[in-house]
Image (cartoon, rainbow, N blue to C red):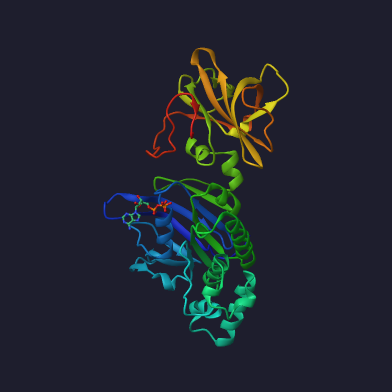
Length: 380
Ligand SMILES: Nc1ncnc2c1ncn2[C@@H]1O[C@H](COP(=O)(O)OP(=O)(O)OP(=O)(O)O)[C@@H](O)[C@H]1O
């Protein structure tokens, strides 16, 4: 373990705007030096506000903030007063969607802007180093308008990196088209890793968070509802929200009997839930795997439609469930379609992509990710 102080600490930070209702509640986050943490969640859940609080662009109602071991927001340790360091004194870089470079400054001068007050030779060395890190070493004398969007993005990243041990990024790649976005994102991640810079990044794109983050802080209605590694979130989601946010789901609501939930997709352990409790099964589309076998555990479903996406195929299915009627299902298989519309196929259910939760919906916000109650697929 490194002895370096934590790059950023938010401790029970709460903040709101004019309405008097908090939009960020008790957010606690600690970023180690060199760690990339993504704030992920639906629109309006408080991601940008959390970032603005860390930046010093907003003053929190409660909760201290520390950077590199320094108190930048909150009551001094000796309780002698309240501290608020302005953004420019926090030694933190910002990279926002609108990454505008200064059009009247050459690339090198754009980067040197944040290094004012340092010896000229040191500035030149740092400018060269960060430009090399983003693969733009040859552009030091170029004007911003001579660069493509992706190149400008890279210079903006270098500019944000130059003076700082930590970075705050707000949807930094969302203005780029898909293929450019992927390239710039790959490169940015490599640069962050090589520079050992801690980064707190806002995104609403689950795939981007899974790709970029060492840890993901999943936010819902102003709170961090799960803070985990990408794999931890994938394997052990703690709520229906944490499953639904990452993919479509097949769902079934029922009551726990003998410690399990009996559904048309099988019987699933309902650990921690008492008998008679309302419970909900959620499965990811990948949990339903077409199989050649027709064992007793397999389920039969009719293929309604096939949607090829290139690297994977979405299958829309219906399962006859007798009294409960037809149950719509969604499956996702790698590669091309293994079947055609109209066929009846057998499906095996992968238990590790199936999750049972209490069906109380406590605290679920009224957003479009909340499904209708009852059985069936959501997110169509
Ligand atoms: N300056 C402001 N004044 C008043 N309310 C605000 C202000 N900024 C944000 N809000 C409100 O605070 C809540 C959280 O907003 P925030 O921008 O932090 O969410 P977000 O998760 O970043 O959303 P998005 O993904 O849409 O950018 C929202 O309800 C928003 O309307």
